[in-house]
Image 1 (cartoon, one colour):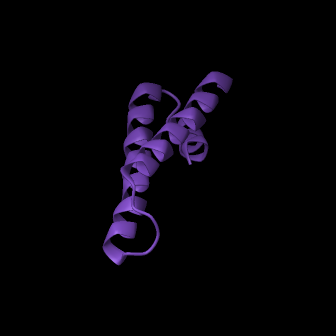
Image 2 (cartoon, rainbow, N blue to C red):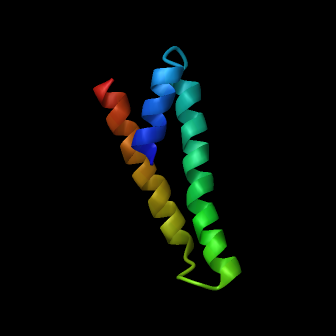
Length: 70
């Protein structure tokens, strides 16, 4: 998720790397938490906040790969 979002933002806004990275991290965090919140609301699956943290960390790894390769 971080790989794709960061890649798209670097492609669309190449002059704004820092702002783009912050935006991508906010989006990744929101998506990760939304999955956990959905599990809690519909009572299906396993609700654990550490899964949302792991999703955000995984997104950061993908973002870092794009920033290093760029």
